[in-house]
Image 1 (spheres, rainbow, N blue to C red):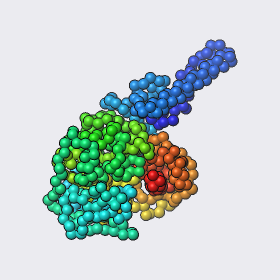
Image 2: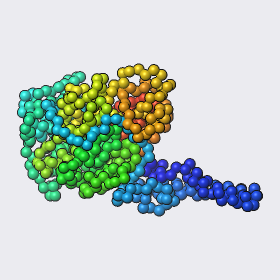
Image 3: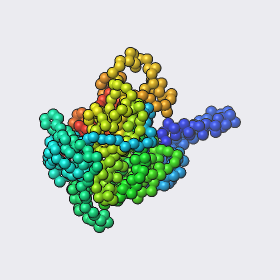
Image 4: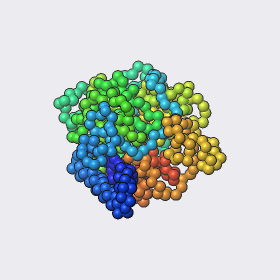
Length: 544
């Protein structure tokens, strides 16, 4: 049964019917004192349960049939049907598609960034080939150490797809081409100029340009790597055309940045970016909007795109979850995704005729003495951003959020799409009988710990996993953390067994690492689900 259409559980339905009919049965029994009357009353109750079950099934079969004919976003609140009266009430400001998600979990942490943006002084930035899934280990670098580059100048290209240019996010001097194991290039480091210089980008008429020429424009200017293709979460092939394009305008991950704050002052570029994306697809540009609040997300309410509101706990803000409930992807019907700041960069290729890789990054976590936002550049050096900002030793630096981010040290650089740095305490200390005496509140979905008594109280996490990897047993935890029509535990086991057909049948094409990160957090077996999923996606991609 689809979570999207599961409005009332069968136990809840039975309770409701029992509650409404039991007074009638009791009155009938008292008035007649006859066992036959009670029997008749029970028969009526069972008949009501049967009829309700039939209507429950029919409502869901109607939804499945609608999805089969391509009308997946039927507005359930405007349909008839027995369950309409029990459906969740949509916010008054919603005009259009609204989906309330039940599965998931909101992790409340200390260290949320204040709504203040400061300018950060950055010495170096880096373009990192490992940020791009599927790129050959040693891309072709077209600059040498000591070379001067402008923002938007080509830096390297993938030998498998040489038509895609990866360009400099800033102007300055190339001061390092760093290598890792097997001489794979890990970073191309640029010393940032005080006064930025930009490669001039030719003007185009978006209304008249052909799609083919628009693709060439993006390939040449560096805009193409801002796109991500689902499945696989890779830079799409220039020859491909997406069925739809999705942009999530809110992030529900722990301590995630406020996208409406980031958008402020960039509205024109954002709309121009959406217009550009609309020329790249024969389908629709979909905006996922935040429907969790009592008031409308006004920052994104007036843009020209198809809007869908989502409410519910994390991962409601994940673009993969939103795609699943609007237009699911598969190996044939692919979709492209972008973040808000990537759309703004695309828009500035047209409005300002330059590759503008400035980024607003949230500094979050209780490891910061004063969490706030900074204005910097894509791939900025982390040491420059967190200098004099931490309040203790023994900290874990994460490029991204605590669930799906990547561990870094101060000398590393922000990942290509990261708009958040999280710093939390390392979990080096040993907690005596921690699971036997669970007195200390901690981020956990388990009700064994006292944090469930104060669900809105932010907590201080550590990296301690409170246990080692265990037997991979069926617990049902994953399904309660993922609001999608997939069975993640069965899928993970199919990946471990390299069962191609089961992976495909169990919905691997719809998932990316961030979608299963919450399930990994909740996993009793301590399984590395994100790593397992990536191995499965790579296996499927290699199989073609």
